[in-house]
Image 1 (cartoon, rainbow, N blue to C red):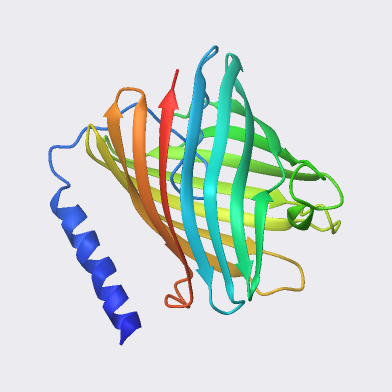
Image 2 (cartoon, rainbow, N blue to C red; image 1 turned 180 degrees about the vertical axis):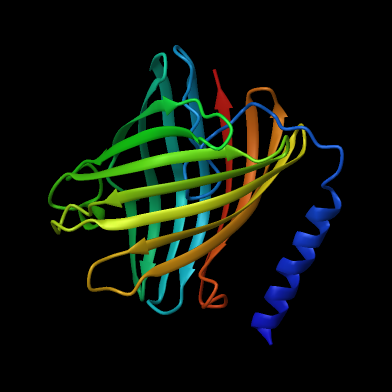
Length: 253
């Protein structure tokens, strides 16, 4: 019954958003949040951007609850078509009756624009990250540096609709075999200040069952360089046992 009620709420919210899909124009400000996939847009030279937020996540199967006290990504355009990035989360995690609080390891990275995109050719960027060992709370750290590599692509379908997709490899710093990552995200600009999205993302690891998740949300442009966002994330097979609720804020200088 609870599962059916949740599905009904999701459908109702979706129908309300669809009712707004008229006379819309997209906006230019494009943070990498919300959502798990990453956009292909790269900051211009000299532009500084801060993206921060909070979330609550629960997984009843593992009796785990996680609160992000602050999740932050700092981006800076160092030269044309190249940006540098640094990010980390301050979290409070409860596993059964044990509570841990601290920073997860810092991640350093760069996003490089490869193609501007035209017609069927997607706008494409390369994202390379390195999660540092021993650069956070011991219980959250891996013994070795953990690189990850992503190809970020985006097609503008119409003036208001766009389709983004990511392909990547993620090392965990403990095993030599990476997990494969794939995501697809459909976005709609409802008005110049409001956009919505629906996303599916997946992890594939050798010897393990594939993990698939969905999330959806909205972003509100407060002015030309400030954005507020909200989103909901879940496993569609286990709606009532694993989910997260997210909210955040992005500003550009």
